[in-house]
Length: 150
View 1 (cartoon, rainbow, N blue to C red):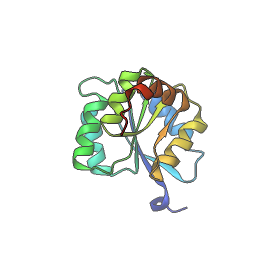
View 2 (cartoon, rainbow, N blue to C red):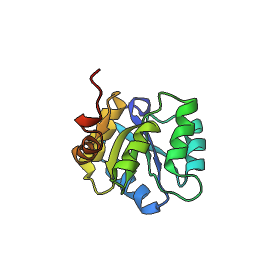
View 3 (cartoon, rainbow, N blue to C red):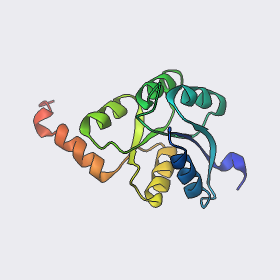
View 4 (cartoon, rainbow, N blue to C red):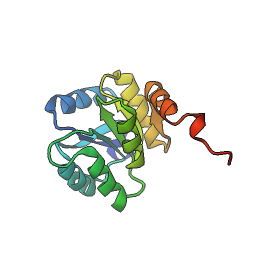
């Protein structure tokens, strides 16, 4: 498969071990390549502008500019950017903030490699991808009582 046919990913996380793990997970996928890495939100915005990745994996908590602010800046200039939050935080407030900031996927770092790969493919196809555990948390927060008759 030619490089231009691969799903191009940008990994944004302040821990080098996460970058190594993502790189390792993707080396077995013939349809994906890691094209860039950033270690904070400012680097993420700059790397996104330079690389135009198909999918960005974004941590939330980073020094300096965090993932939420970086997502908002990226989505302001690139509204079709596909950003998947990759984090340890499963709380409903973090999930809701990430989704409202433009995330189209939400994946916990404790996920299996197969879940990461599936999520990247789904998001690349234009779908939303939220793990069932996270979807359950959102459903509890925004239950049927919060819906209007309309």
